[in-house]
Image (tube, rainbow, N blue to C red; front, top):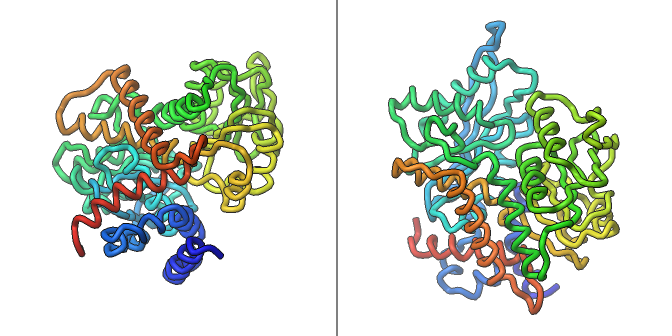
Amino acid sequence: MTDSSRLVETFMENVRRRNEGQDAFLQAVEEVATDVLTIEKNDPGFARARVLERLTEPDRIIGFRVTWADDRGDVQINRGWRVQMSNAIGPYKGGLRFHPTVSPSILKFLGFEQVFKNALTGLPLGGGKGGSDFDPKGRSDEEIMRFCQAFMRELSRYIGPDTDVPAGDINVGAREIGYLFGAYKALKGQFNGAITGKGEAFGGSEMRVEATGYGLIYFVENMLETLGETIEDKRIVISGKGNVATHAAEKAICEGARVITLSDTSGTLVAENGFSQEAVKWVRAQKAAGEDVSDPPKDLELQFKEGALPWEVEADIALPCATQNEIDEDAAKALNDTGVRLLAEGANMPLTAGAMRKIGESNMLYAPGKATNAGGVAISGLEMSQNAHGRFDSADEVDRSLKEIMGNIHDRIAAEGREGNRINYRRGANVAGYRKVATAISAYGVV
């Protein structure tokens, strides 16, 4: 075992002891620790402040009961949480997720990743995450409204434009943000930028819906540029059929690429000659309506392969945009076998630890989600600025800013991750994000 490996293992023994059973969180911490602990050890200020150990403990975890009435008048009880991970460089910032799998462990993992992601944007944003185990599937619009209002009755005590600024995430889209912000405004008697992802009619930013998917493609284009290539005519396989997946597909097609797949948990849609924009719109409409995608109209030239994975299809570029740990070792091997040369994450931590090792052993160029899917939070940061100044940018202005921010993120990572003629994007992202947060934490003293 090398000195570096021994350092990481000693550090992780302590983290595992304090966070037993929180596998996703431990996976995220170990990935960062592998890249930054030697940086910390060799900087007296960072080492004295024990920066990374501090970052593995949230500033606070807020838990609360959410009590609401369904359409029959029956009382329903859910759990809600907000994990405020670090506000070292700005107010806590991160989405709200409504899903039965939501737990403090999952939110700690997401909040930890958010700290580094937000630091990479160059904007003054801390990291946090929140949500509830509420399942909106099968619920009426009125039930979702009542749940959001009940959730905000508790959450409103802990958020604000200079304190903690939530946004949307899985199952929290424009409708839910509207209900949440409406409740916040009524409870506080104030109209301020305490939530992002709002509708444009009440303080939202242009391009917020498209930002994560579009930003992913802008980052990929920067990666290709370092190879002297463009995205034009590249075959791209994408997993998922949600906001990030469909907007990444939309932008990739606009840039001249051929998007070959979109998917859901039941199988994969394949367009051997590439998705059309009409096909992408159909998938998005099916998702919005809560319908499956197994029976596409014949004129869209899509084939649904039940139980199949996108990673089994020949491609140049892979964009996992569905959920965490969706690519295991077998899928990573399939990606390599089908000729994929570049993998960029649209979801948060979609590779298992084993898949990460497989990808690391290959010649594939890999970039982590804390860099590649930062477009959403970047535009949320711009929304906060627009709210504070009362000046709202046009879609073209926001898109230019997004492209510039993603280019700057790429360049910061490249500067830290260059290894000879190759860029280690994972290491570069972890080190660049860590340095910014660590510089702030070590400057504050023991607080």
